[in-house]
Amino acid sequence: MKYLVFVFTAFSIMIACTEVEKVMILHDINGYTFQQDDLVEFEAMAIQNGKVVAIGTMAEMAMDFPDANHISGNGYTVLPGLIDAHAHVMGLGFQELNIDVSGIESLEGTLQKVSEFAADNPDIEWLTGRGWNQVLWESNEFPDANDLDSVSDGRPIWLTRVDGHAGWANRAAMDLADISSETEDPQGGRIIRNGDGEATGIFIDTAMDYIREIIPERTSLERETALELATEKMVSNGITSVHDARIDEVDWELYTRFADQGRLKARIYAMIGGTGATFDKLAKNGPVENYADHMLALRSVKISADGALGSRGAALLEEYDDDPGNRGLLFYDQGELNEMVFKGASLGFQMNIHAIGDAANRQVLNAFEFIKRELENGDLRHRIEHAQVVHPDDIPRFAELGIIASMQPTHATSDMNMAEGRVGNDRIQGGYAWRTFLNQGTVIAGGSDFPVEAVNPFYGLYAAVTRQDFNGNPPGGWYPEHSLSREEALKIFTVNAAYAAHQEEIIGSLTPGKYADFIMIDKDYFKIETSDIWKINILETWVAGERVYTSY
Image (cartoon, rainbow, N blue to C red; front, side, top):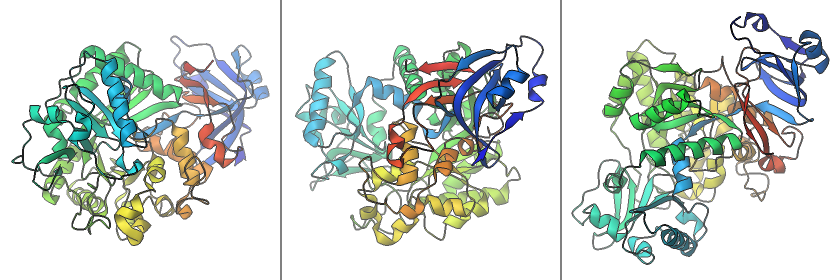
């Protein structure tokens, strides 16, 4: 770590002469940022017109900006604003409006939560929510429609699994969707059935569409409320920018309207959902690199290649260790995936593809290899989202093809209770293998996948450093050889995440010329015990030099 003596560039005299704001100096702070590859410290920061002008000592700030306004940081620690490189903004907002059963450790407790919500909301047509996880229950078995029927008052119920790759319906919901023993499994999906071939109420991956397509659309007011709740939740947890993994036209219209009205509190780097009709509409004028002073961007596409480990939908090269005969689900064949990736990339869009199992990761790498041969626009920084279980032979291909690994540290600590059981001792060696990726020079962009995981990015920083749960288990960490240093962990949530969005010149660090996106926290991230990293509290969040959240 280096101590920054003073940083001041010509930026401070190049600010446009129209509407120049007075310099504001935030002083008496314990500041950290990255400058090139070095972590540096500073005790004061000068801000003007929403951007950092200089960082250094208070004496230097006072000398160079004698007429500045001063704000004391009261000795608190300041970090660059944290960037979540893979999340679902509207999903987070709707979780605040729907039934939230995440973290409940029993089927009975889950059903109780559904029953209470139903009683409190008698006028809602459909009872919807998310977060159940059978791995946390004593039975460790999928539930069925009969369980939900036991707490139903006749209304349809639909609950999405915590990973978003399975859904649980009651009989009323299945009847409305005309689900019967004759209903076929779609490509990339599976209906769980009983011994008689009847649907049990659990729908895996693309089979979820049978139910989702008949759920009434959200009202405009519900969507606005969800976005407000989501952005408030983000900034209160120190997130100043997020990569939103799958949006549609309705989302983009809402985001741009909020940005135009000055209501968007955090930056959103949006990924268009697929290369179909939604892409054709949103991409007709090409990528949007900057909307509303970089509050929004639309220059990437999200495609899913497989499901998730928890629901055994992740596509594996060999069968699941705990489910013989099942290799999971590939959503497309190689030709179909190649065609979609080519379509988006040929129009200048970064392609960000969900791949969890080793078969899916190999298929996606093959697609990226294909477009590398076929296209000349090779600087789009394509990404694999999650890259959770990768065959050791395929890990070097990330570096060879220049693919960014967009990974979520809390997935490792959430999955460690079942991941090895799913894939066995050998394949887990290529699972959640952060150190292997970093050592070969692959850029890792850190995220949470909220609301699949908690929105709090310090949970991710803690998981990256310790590979333990909040109780310090397992001792020494789960496969601790893949743990990151504190500097490396902070990088994946700041400068690396900015790079993964082509935004490293404007955000990700507190260096002159970049936006003044930063957070003030109550503990020194670099000096507290590692066991306390997840306990860090956000005191203030600033975006473009404006305070958008305070805890006091």
